[in-house]
Image (tube, rainbow, N blue to C red; front, side, top):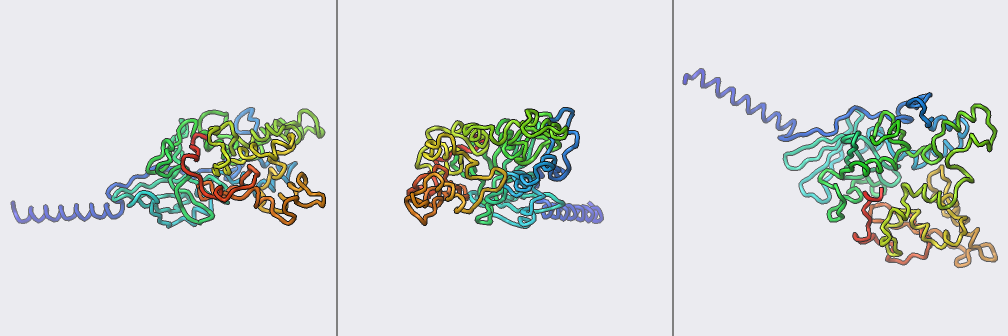
Length: 404
């Protein structure tokens, strides 16, 4: 072999090595992009609800139409957790705060998660050894007052959803394992990237964070026609017939103005089933887990309330809206709740018969750790023993996936 040819071969080999090293440095030996999507634009959040509906005969009108006649309720609802149950992840201020955060996996040594905010999208890179996966986070679930869980729709038609492994917990201002993802919990479909929600599990999960998943109603998750968050029409029902009757001048109380659900037209059982669709109803929980020593039930308010003597002995006069404004974020003012308690439990002098200066909520509805970094008020309404304030043992924690 001539010296000229040998020189070209050596130079070519050296160039190939340099290029390979550059590619390894920039891309890693195995860099995978998953979930690449354009920015999600949702109705009522990023673009207006169509004036004539999303399709001919659409019974929904969007919350902006409700505001024409109900501005007070609409304004109050805008500050509630229900109005923030689902957002495009890149639209949340949290996405910018997470930019650059690097987190070690709580259970998997050598695995790291690094968050980045790029071109309006929130990404997370999962690094294990030389393998790097870039996962695009599409949606942020939760009001953010307590926690924010991230999801990516892998297949909108089937549908299939990835519930990301790490959740942001507001109280600790840090990332931690998403509830149900800890090793040994045994939730089906949980893997190294998070939990796979498939079919009905995916629809139920999104269903509790939206008013409607697609239009016309179907089995897919369609961001183009989805009505995000728990809006007016999620609880009161589709509003087009009500709206059209109001514009025609129908008077208050007219049959054509009646919505499927509204003030004075429900029973305690119906209301608790409505709220229990997402906040859980006893019919959705294994009866063996509904026991006084299971603090995990604090997360499921209707379940606890239905076990309480207050509701059982109220003769149907106690329900969720006895204490809570259904349009607003739950109040943290214990004095307001105490006034409700005293209305039924007043001593002859008008005070509390047990503790005149006491705090009813602190004694009978303490905030309990349900084992998910979040404190929930115990709606069983009872005297709580000290051991109840400890996180529940794993065998008492329900399979959250099956409860959605």
